[in-house]
Length: 137
Image: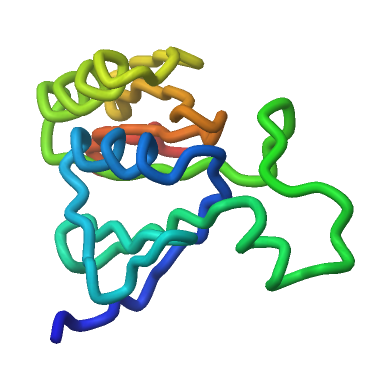
């Protein structure tokens, strides 16, 4: 059995099969043991998991909520750090080729990032940072 990560983010999605393929393209691996027709566990380098939840399944967790997973709202931004600007660019480009949409790009010298929306409007930030280069106060 694979170790369950200390950080697991639940994302509410429209189309489970389509989202599984999107995240596989980005390098996540599906853990079949924790997946079914309503949800899928997607693992990033063993230390970070996503649970892709269908809207109907997500509603069972908080039935008093009126809406779930609306594309035009943002309740969180998800950031993954990479070891180089090139890795950031590669992951970002892969996301765009898989159907993601650009939201923001930046380069502050010590910090570099490329942000995109996934298929359901969740915003991801791929970033590289050199803490030693950060501005000093």
